[in-house]
Length: 422
Image (cartoon, rainbow, N blue to C red):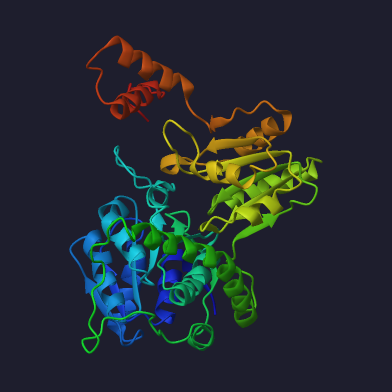
């Protein structure tokens, strides 16, 4: 059914259609509307046979989901930003135990300083915990990925994280096709757990494992990710057969035929990138883009094939590895190591800073001309940074950088006739 609906509400309805039996909730912006929406469906009776549990923290939310999943229930939760850090131990536990929990991450920056806006730092902080990580480009894909995530998690007995950009997607109202219960039931079979705690057949989970077996246990987690590389496109194909639209999969090439410069990115920024690609194509520039849906497992072979004709690669990413540069770009370079070519890292959108078509067009043009540096910070105010570096060198107790920068920006704003900020 087509609806003009907030992204969070659409995702809540999609999760409910998957018939979770335990939903664990702790509010943190910008994912709160999702669990509120699921809670309302439970309270109204629209979602039956589901226990909605309000917990005291994000750590408790995932811990309860772990217990529920181990007991044989289909379990779901959601979080964002500092919340995923608070549950970090449980994130690793869920993966190490091979429990098919589905969790939404409403991607948001991590402080300090405090910032509630979107970037991908939270998901990147646990990228190697053993969860499958799927990134939605649109709210429609966010809906579709959640439905696919439950099937993927349960076929592999592995947790799946569906990442959707905070506010940009979670709070955006747009047209979304929310499927019917009959369609979801036809796609997602009833939950039949691979492992379940049973009083009639007791055993321990999460017990001590020493050096003699720990490597093998970790390898098995790696093997599940490799299996997912095959299963993700298969599930996306079945989804298309049932729902009549393409969604999910490993990655989405866009106008890469004949493209000499290709932009690679995760999430909603791909919509803006496609606008830039279309405009530059009209002007005769040979550019294209690739939207990565599956960041973990990372589709090395598929990305290599998608970038086969590119002479320059620009990776736009909403996260930063201080002292290195790009997290995603490092993975892209691994994909291209047999056919080396320039891979430029463009750090953009940190803390919700707008990523404009004009700025993207500029860096793509510079990449094509060979003038873009290996690591570039999009729209960085270099004067402000230089001033703060100079301040820190001059004064030992120079104060917190964030507050100093805010003071500088405030003093630089034009004032009205009374001398007050407008």
